[in-house]
Amino acid sequence: MTKSDLVFEVMQLGDLTRHDAETIVETVFDSVIGALRSGDKIEIRGFGSFRTRQRNARIGRNPKTGVRVDVPAKRIPFFKPSKDLRDLVNAQPANGASAPAAPKSTTP
Image (cartoon, one colour):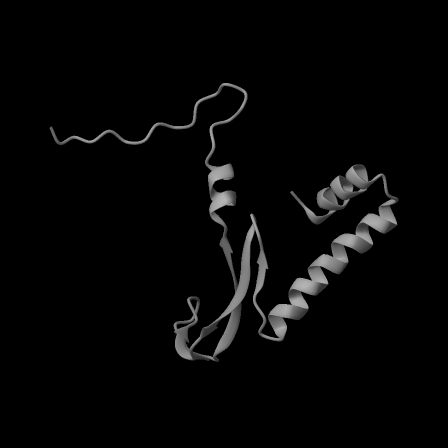
């Protein structure tokens, strides 16, 4: 799903204009980005939580030339899905198709 698809879904669900739906989606994204920039944690019950993790500085390597490169410390966004979301994603499909079977154990 792309951002445009999400805007279309919001537009259909709320019986809104495309401009209003784009404003809603942009506002949500901007709010998440702003909170993460300021170091806050975002928790959406039933969906998951967003936070940042600190990565230490390290020495990397340019794969093309092999030259060593200093990679600075940085914060990266991290998403942890809720148990509800994990259960919904792993639920059996409603159309009757079965999910791939788990590997069978070879021990007696």
